[in-house]
Length: 447
Image 1 (cartoon, helix red, strand yellow):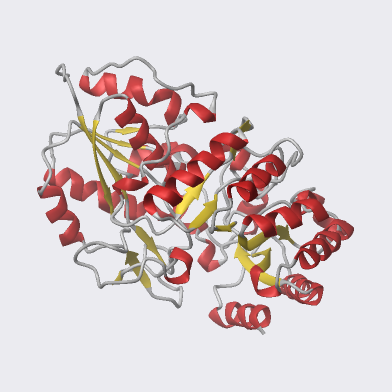
Image 2 (tube, rainbow, N blue to C red):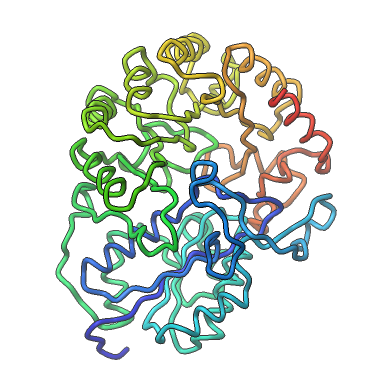
């Protein structure tokens, strides 16, 4: 290791390899936050996004279309070993490898490369990304972090091709990591335990800021059997209302951002102390903006007051974390909501002015031992309530309470390879994948 006065760090968001993928307000917020932290501490930063829909060589698209959402460029590739029998095409989603190679050639050699990861079964895209970085910068160490690295550390160490797999939270460990690889040290200029002290994510490193992801809190007090949130964020941390609205105003006034994507796992929990003050400040700021909640909001936190405030604040599309309408048996997966709470929440949202098209309830499909009839019943019940059912396919996640049941129910050896946990093939059903079944659910939900 050589002493480096001002190190140059390259941060990379990798490709997705999957049967389907879409930019449904998905940004690598953790990686962009790390970029911002590094810049605050005097580090030179470069950023490359293999998923960049606005790459200079990509077909031109309107960044504002669909409130910032849109399809990735895709290239058909071979299916992974073990999934050859799935009757769907498999693709690389994102920019062409030749574009990535050329972009890497344009920057000075970095002292360290940081690559993030998201879905565990997307690791082949991570591996391809790392392989190309390695071919261009063979002498530069590469560190992999993110969700795959944290949940499947042993698999990542054997398969991702990085020099190190970082399985600990990045904020507390990024400066020691930089010092270990580059010799550069800096005095800590934020408090990892205080979200108000963090810099805003470095969204300006993107080609376009077509929407802004927003975190007003971290962690979730629930420990749902299917969810890894409590594993990745065991502590609940809150930002102040003042800090949140200052950030919203910054992106809106300085960069013209209209759409804000709430990434919180538990925005409405303890609403009197957290969500309500934030919503009231947003309303008082009188900003012409929109909010979207793809991570879902907890049904139990929806009251007449919170519904009215969300509507006045500009919440444009809401997703509710319902998961199933089998309320009497749902203790096996979570304890978030009762039937009375669900119907009451829908009534409050409708009374506040939310239209059916703007409110959807997530329904899990593909749970271990789940019947098709129960999924269809859930879809019908949500439709009858006056809002839109949104099917969310279950992904088995190591370390969660449902993982043992998923292992027993799957037709694949889930422990052998994360590739088999891909929710697109409904891995926790004994019968082979059926596109006809999936189509039936989609038609029922949209009809």
